[in-house]
Image 1 (cartoon, rainbow, N blue to C red):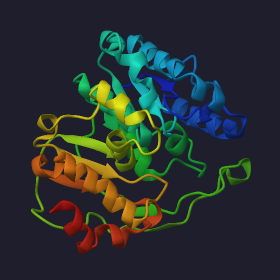
Image 2 (spheres, rainbow, N blue to C red):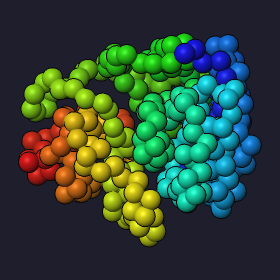
Image 3 (cartoon, rainbow, N blue to C red):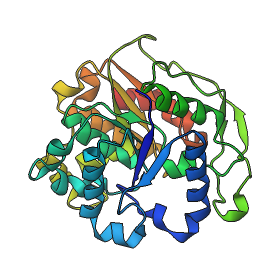
Image 4 (cartoon, rainbow, N blue to C red):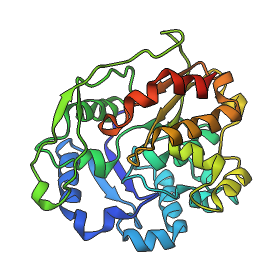
Length: 305
């Protein structure tokens, strides 16, 4: 399946519609068009932070419209955020998403984990990967080579057959203003895959996403209604759904300290995940923050055994 037309949605943060990212938005749009792609913004995608915060149903309307549009080959999320769970009633109360669902590529990461679980609940595979603002709109002179390689493969073939580590890791950008346009981020040699424990070879379908998002579905520490709403709509996969899967995890830009990291993994352990999955694949933390602490034996013993 070759992608010809992309629909961009803002399912969490409404940042894409703000004036302060106009230069990023224009850059990303041009890059997609240079790849020969037709791009449309769903009707509410550019309505900004305040509107989309106050109207989660508008975000849900865009997702339903995108899946209902037979001309769209790929749905690309603008960026992550905090509260995609608020879309649940507008997508599931009357089986709205199930009725709109048609096979197409869905791509995003971070808080988009929530949307990936919605699709998994309905049996539609999705791709945990690039988002528009952080990746396609990266202010460096070109898209980062690793990002571009996998994105181009996806739009040209509709699939990703193998994931290899990047040869470099990049220090997070701090200046997203117009002054940062054309400025590259510092980069450093990457170590590649690090085998931490257990069998070095394991297999299974991949399921997971952002650790903070998965934790909040169960704990609801950030929003008082989140855990109950997610439970009402049975968003978190059952142990049967997790059985034999490779659990994919990454931490967010919040850079959780080691104590919170252990607490979040412990919540997944208490749910029973580590007893049924075939393996754990963990993304390098942003800027390698707490990397040694995260992988230290004392935390693995505390959390996983």
